[in-house]
Image (cartoon, rainbow, N blue to C red; front, side, top):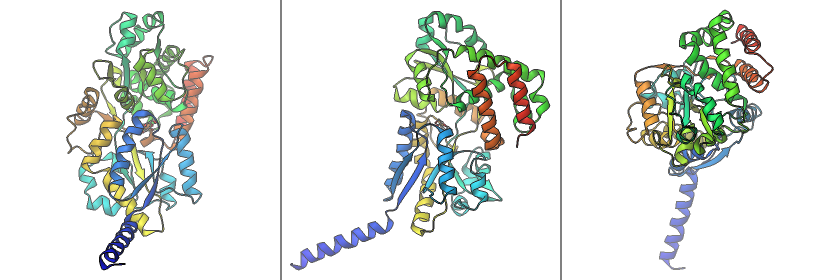
Length: 411
Ligand code: GAL
């Protein structure tokens, strides 16, 4: 073999070893399986693979209610993934307290996360005993209703500008063969809608008394009775909505089969994938058009501890990427969520996202339920709301009594 060929063989061998030394596979679990969600998570994967590492996608279908138990049991059971999505808040509390999660404080400090993350409450949700265990990647607010221009045109009524106008349009929608309010069967959907109606009808102070201060008396009180009456009326509006997944309900709005859907702003990703334009094909009303507010829910990534230093290095590289400016823009534009940092150019965001950015900038924000209620209390409320939503023999008063009992024991 001549000397040139020997040199080429040797160089190739060195390159492959060098590349191999830094190309780390990282299994990443999440529950983003809809069209919009998949488009967004692809931005993370693309950015991570561009570093020479390898994003091994671990999508889990069925929504957070299915995925979270799988994720948590894998970590507790000694079969951890490299990284995982969870919601902002208290879902990883036990995992962190068990010492199973990677401390990211060094890269958070080096990256100045405390100065760039807005609102800083998102970072507080990642912080246990002064150490940071997750990287916040977006802000998703539940406080929206999405309205189909086609459904209202077919029904011969104007697109509503608030909740009262929406409920008043229900008869015309039904007469036109539409489902007024699209709702999927997963429990977190009807429970999420309850929280939105709670704030719109009862106001933020009442919501805070109950969810932050765990005031069971307020939960059982007359103001909350009005909320349960409104929630009971909303239940009637969803008759005919026989779909399971949230994005199937969103599709009912996209096609004009339903008038509206109360859903977090991840619904935007579906309208975008369907090629629909905010203000032209659909309208978004923050706070149901009653009290424009943004709840600071959303997603963060956590990294189970790993003995392999190359894996730990890759985990930290992914965490830094996820909060970097270009990736924040690329991911959030596809996800329909707001970025966790205020120092990036979101001018290409659509009208609904711009509305969200303006409300966020004005500071009209509230915590997400996941940030103030334990996973156990959230689960009990979800079970109650899906029972009430599907059992029309349960009265609003009965649901309220059960709700107040949950709040009395809430943590
Ligand atoms: C939420 C999550 C969002 C969204 C939604 C539906 O928990 O924060 O990112 O995708 O679930 O899957």
